[in-house]
Length: 288
Image (tube, rainbow, N blue to C red; front, side):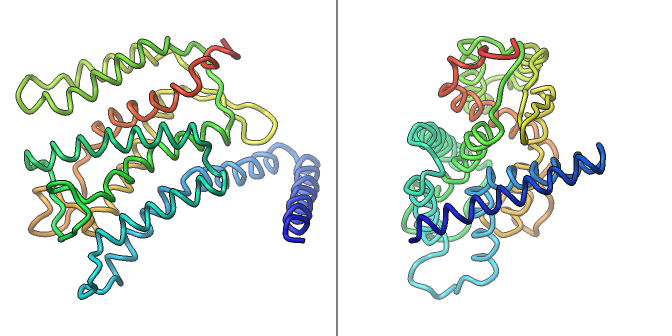
């Protein structure tokens, strides 16, 4: 009965959306654009599901989590993130292949967290038991949220590309970015050459995405920047909720420096390449 009800409900929603689409076509291009923008927002929100839940948990626990609980706030966040990720996999909202790529980014992020907290780039001020050194285990899920968004958006918008660079070149770039996150503390920072490398490698690439039936397109570099911008905004929320702190925020909270936007752009390239590894045979399949 439950399956029948769910199937009937989906059929009802599809029928209503079809009626709305017909109505929009009769009203002209403006109504069609509004209808597509509505579905663009719905799909983006669905792609952000894991990241949105994690961000909400950071804010809710900062505001209302009891400070005298035996289970520390960071430990609760770790268990909650594990439960949410498990539910997404069990509900088949993420494929096993996507979950594997996200797990790899989880490890990549955790290793970098261990190093960055050790050199004092940022700290996690609250106590916890589920941690490695100065890094609570929930932090790996924050990196996983970026991978989860890219993987889900890739599937929901059915990404295709024009003039996508070879995957091997993308992998070399991602590895160089990752190594520079460590080496720039002891060697010259190669961030500027890496930005140039991103521009050269992806400068001619267009991403084609399907909101409903028609493919739209935009420069892939613009897509990278927009995603990095939203991650930077989410980081401001996370630091405001005292999930972690930069040295400049220890006295009182202030916005994350805009320069961190570049760091998130670099880190997002790593996540993109990990997800692209699942689709590397299709990167040049259409619109080439």
